[in-house]
Amino acid sequence: MAQAGLDVTSQINIHVMEGKIVIEAAATPEPVFKLPYTETELLQGMSPHTAHADELAQLTDAETDL
Image 1 (tube, helix red, strand yellow):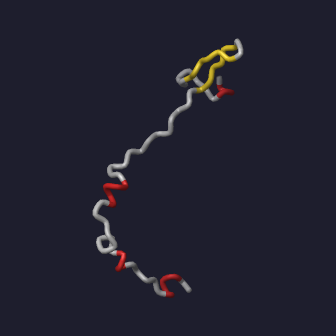
Image 2 (image 1 turned 180 degrees about the horizontal axis):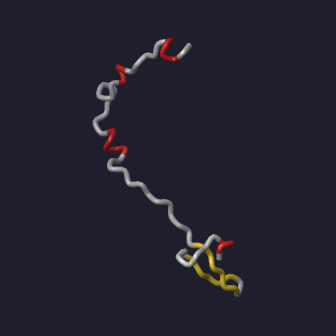
Image 3 (image 1 turned 180 degrees about the vertical axis):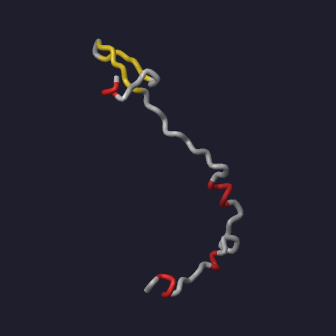
């Protein structure tokens, strides 16, 4: 079992293929992280003015080590 990456608590799938019993580790779905807001909700009512697009910082040479 260890060679197959299984232990006694592993979830498995069992099926018959070409007359042989096949035991495989069950595919585990990736955990889904549920965000509290959708992209649509976050962008609702957004405009260049409310996004403060006119207030983007302009870095100086001293700030960028140029």
